[in-house]
Amino acid sequence: MRWEQLFADLAAQAEAGEAREEEAEAGSRARAEHGRLQLADRLRGAVGAPVVVGCRGVGDLHGRLADVGADWLLLVDDQQREVLVATVAVRTVAGLTGATVAGPDGVVARRLDLRRALRGLARDRAPVQVLLDDGAVVRGTVDRVGADFVEVAEHAADLPRRAGAVTGVRAVALAAVAAVRRLAPPAG
Image 1: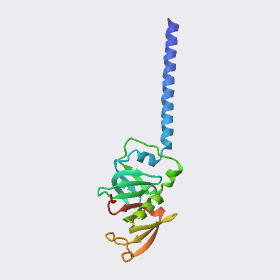
Image 2: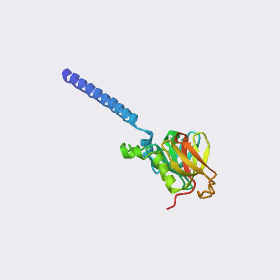
Image 3: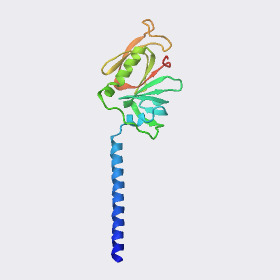
């Protein structure tokens, strides 16, 4: 009888030890998986949710998270204006859901970068505010996008981009762009 009890105790101890090892291993695996996540993966899980994005030089931007790209995110503010935010300017994000969605990691996804998004704004000819990481604001229409800069034709926000309305053209280093706010909701 004593031997049966001893073997039962040893078996229980072994099972408890295995359970502890599995728990530790599972925790270690979870930490490793979390260590591979990027901010964009966390943000993709909150698409459709209201968030507050704290940006360098701009402060808090409030809106519904509409999309997440390779190096940008798109908010729609309470006036239905789109706000394109450069991920490098993001300091904090509040309002994330518990979901995380690993994103596409391919050549096409990498091509859908901030420059591509800005080229879309240039095609739309929409008046915008370019919010810089030092707090400055450039108003006008995105004319063209280079490898490391965006060129803005400066004009009053309430005027369309016409030669007579343009007061100057300003090249802005992409590294200085925190966000670009469309001044009117997109047509459609």
